[in-house]
Image 1 (cartoon, one colour):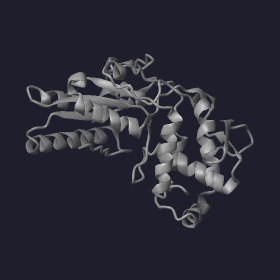
Image 2 (cartoon, helix red, strand yellow):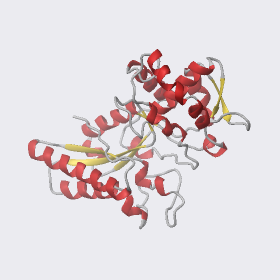
Image 3 (spheres, one colour):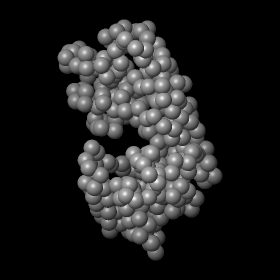
Image 4 (spheres, one colour):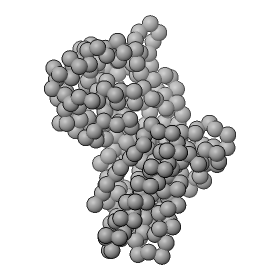
Length: 294
């Protein structure tokens, strides 16, 4: 059984930590009481373990590529990372038990979920580009809605398919990954300079570099069209409630965060794929779910 859950997004750090740690503790204790033959537990974490939210803060090292052997970030920022007490709990709870565990670290996840959420970058990007193509017309140029820094940032995106397959791989090969943290991504690294034209082409648009002065940028364009949202959703027979995710599409990173994938290869997980394939697969799922027009 594979289950992913995330709670308290957007809350203060301490509230998020309390909710997230309690959720894991409750789940582990319930399952270990009911499943006496439990063998393995995978904990999905992510870039937060490297201190992404605290990049540039005093004492926070940023040695690239990001490796699983990197030390935890120092206090006071460390107390705001809920992964740390989750990891400590799993280590303590599994000690001297028959079941083992590992930590899986994706970067930005390219994937569809059935409900909108504040972490839904793929939904936000798909809705933005779909509506832009509908309003401005296919073949129109669309500038990357970030700046020059985010245009060239190196990142290691993770498709939900490869991520799911690593969860399965880990569960079937506990002797290879028990107790370890493992980065998972589709390719070693990518930049939006390379990705943006291909992503936009899927929607029939011509993706170009960051905005030239005098034209509406992404945020301004969305605000200018906000009164037309309801009509666009109705006319295309789409699910309501996804407008609130749009803010995620404008939260572009401005620092490199490429992952080292050596550990995943060393344990025998060799799957990889062009990053754009992960985006297209996820966009196809959002179409079937009527989040964006078919």
